[in-house]
Image (tube, rainbow, N blue to C red; front, top):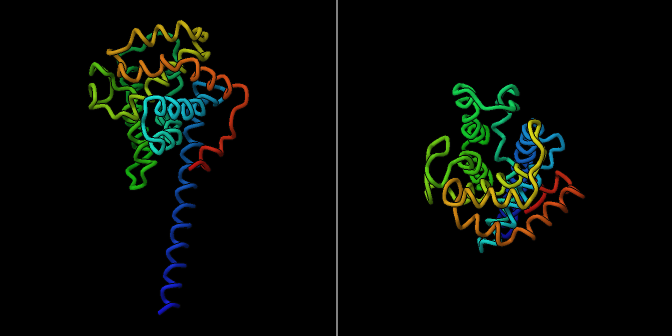
Length: 231
């Protein structure tokens, strides 16, 4: 009986190790696809690293559980994975979109959710939730589903604010970065319109710490692999 119990214990351990390896490999593949999508907008690829760490920090400043914040650090970098399917002629267009181009662009959240797939693994469930919801708006005028207010998952509301500020303060192919103080004013202008006021207030209240974290990542970007290895 002791031998049977020992064998079952060993089999259980080996199964869990194999599952962790499969999950790790899946996560790494999706992160590398996210990096490929990010290179379309950001030639350094550091944007997705900033997204992970800033989303984690903002969640903690809001008093969210550490486990949720850590999972968000790993999921947030995959928020724009759907852009891998958007033609560069649309994604990098410097002017306004035509209605047809806007319809193409607005499909990237759904594309991202489909790429991430339906999974029983919590990390990938969270990543799909973020990908699908990070362009919804607090006032219900976002996309793809016109969700409003608290109907938008908190994970997506946090990532939306971080993504907006980070995008404003980075150079794009069609404009230079806005100074931090202007970007913060632009963020406040969208409070209760595009963004959850509680999330905006937490970001603005802790802006010096968040900006310092962003600058530290820009100076010494963490190894890409740390997003896969972190628990």
